[in-house]
Length: 614
Image (cartoon, rainbow, N blue to C red; front, side, top):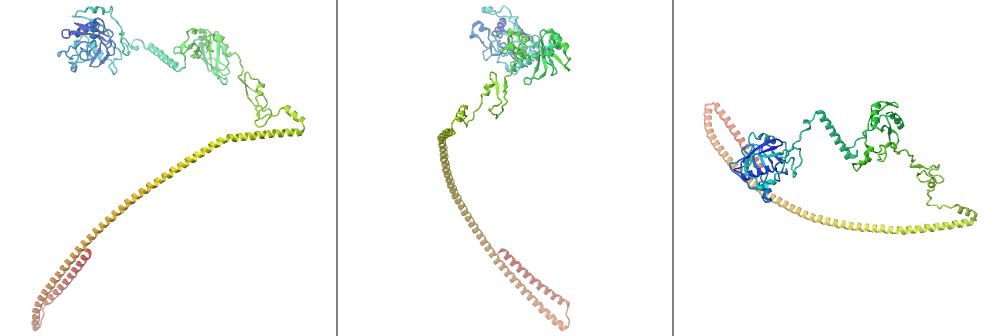
């Protein structure tokens, strides 16, 4: 119960679990028998994850089961066969890629690493690849270069499928589905974006370096030719320059076509020798094209004439690369096959060759000439230099004269008639003519006035409209000014009211501040009065105490004085005084002086404190 799958990267042998998943294994085996998988792409490869295949369209959105081919469209999908013991635990596990629950068809995948446990229970596992039966092929598939969607840049396909062992009998309808020979190549229903085919091999691996460089140059030349065709420089990308034309450059400006024709005729029949000239001045541009009748003559001239001296100039000769004369062979970018061999190199016409071309031989003359007249601007006949084209004559050119717009010309007959008449008649006729002209002038003036009148009316109407518009604008301006003044007055009243309110508030605040100041002053006065009363009371108390102390001192002094007097009397009686008495008298005088100073200092301190409080 196994199948051999041959891929573009190697062989893979799948061992099927037919006893556990009979429905899935039967579908896979029968699809391999009818060669359904031949040519299928590995449309999704994720490195170290899975490699998915089995869709013939190559997009991953298709696939049919074998039961659809046997029983119809209603049997396109079949049910899942999920078993808990069949897990994605090994590299090379084969399982069905379903579109949902019980939606299995033909797509399947290989696991590219071990332990993909989160796929267990979601897909039907029906086979495995053993270690020596295709794991190397799976590793190569895993290393393939892929895009962002997992599609390999180089296609990996299933080439063939071989059923090695099939335990299921074939249904009767299956024999009609088995092809006579195994199909090759990509399926007919494949719609995937083309990529590098599976049999593609890089060029540098198949050819040598020299051949590779030559092919790269040829490819680059074709690319450049396609670009020149797209911008209109050449008629076709596959066009080739003629092989019988030489390009000659570095010529002397004095060299003529006949000189080159004579010089190059020694190598063979020369069809044409054309020096390219400036289309305005006709001066030589110092290069030319020589066309030979035979290719061999052209090659001989190329080898012999290069770097030769012509008219003191060494020329350079090469094969022509110009295809400007071959445009006539192409129509709308496609080559005219009927004129492939013929055609004129000179003019490009397909009905003749260059030696029979008559272009440039006919002297058609100048397209225009100047009048041969001696009269200049302001001459007697009012003649001017004018252009006369082909078909015109000088007389017809001279007849084109402009007449004066303001004076009437008099014919010669009229002039002779006036000479014959009397001067009086002539004067009379002239007066009539003048009157007629004056009438015409007056009529013309009236007509002009009548023509001007509507213009004047239109101008007056415009002026009236402008005045009305100006009056309306002035009225609008005045009304706007009134509204602005009104709004300004209202704003001023509002602002004045607000200012008055603010002034009243400020006055109110000042009044309150004044009351606070008055209260504060009253409090200060009260406190000062109290302080002054206290000071007076304390001063009286101190004075009373001082008086008492003086009285006590006086009593003491009196007592002492009486004692001293008794002693003096006794001394007097005795007739002597002591120093002790002098010393005591000195001390008493100092005490009196100190007490007086202290009282005066206390008075000054009390008066200064009172003044500060005020």
